[in-house]
Length: 394
Image (tube, rainbow, N blue to C red; front, top):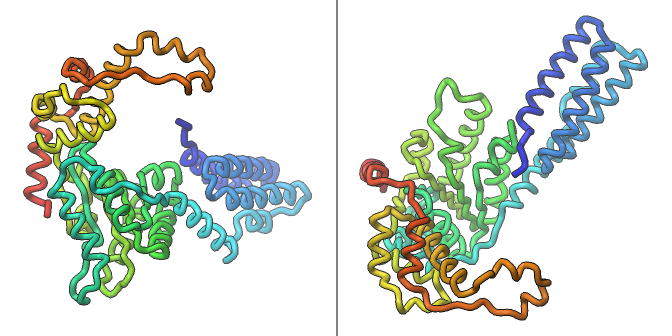
């Protein structure tokens, strides 16, 4: 994973710019020239780390290089300062906005997930189905669909799948937004990204904006929070408020997911009047998830009830059950295909002519898998989710 350096680079740029100003004020123009060149270098590096706004930073870098040249030619004083940090023109502002818009368009994905692809969670699916159906139907003005829904629960329970299914059922524009799309990678510009996100969502309605791990964006506000974080949260709250307008004919549904709902800012919770608990799968749901993740294989020898009961005892999420099935399948594959790794020496064309040997899955495959797949959850964790759902869910 590449290391994100945009934050440190921006900090270093601001520090160097102040050093440049102090040098100009003292009349030390040789130092000012060197600082101007350093500013240009830092901005060029920023252009590499923030590709969607690279043109803006490169243009700014060129101005600093021109400033260094003017100082070298003997053009001193405020003229040198203003040439480097003059006010952005309207054209430059529009260029920056367009780059943000192009970036958020890259988050659009057409979802092919259907409700049938999700094992169990029937109560949760019904609630979401009702929301998307009401959104699409002709109805009296006083009947409005929920426009902010919070999905909360243990990790790996299918919150992202539910959002994808909701978008797929509506054939809606689906924005799959992760915190990394907004935060550290775009240091200092999160508010602009959020604004662009909802502008583009409105233009492409019906839209579903899915914000995963929203707690990372909206942890409780405090005096220790940075100004940039407070501004970003304020922008998000404003956008969420804007889409609660009952007179709007546009459907822009915000689905947010969190594994730690108790960490959310109170103001954020108020923007999500519908809060749905996505629990660990029960016995019926576990069996459905196993069937989904073993499609195409013979499972007639399996005792699904026994596997489901052990999964529940170990506090497995849907993701854990999927991993359990994969581990069991690989146990079968390795047993039936001895020295499989040696085939890696063959050309791809030869491999395509061969077939993988399989056999019916057996309980011993799952017994081996249970030894390797562990859940981090405990009874105490589940009780905390259930208590929060009882107090704040709805």
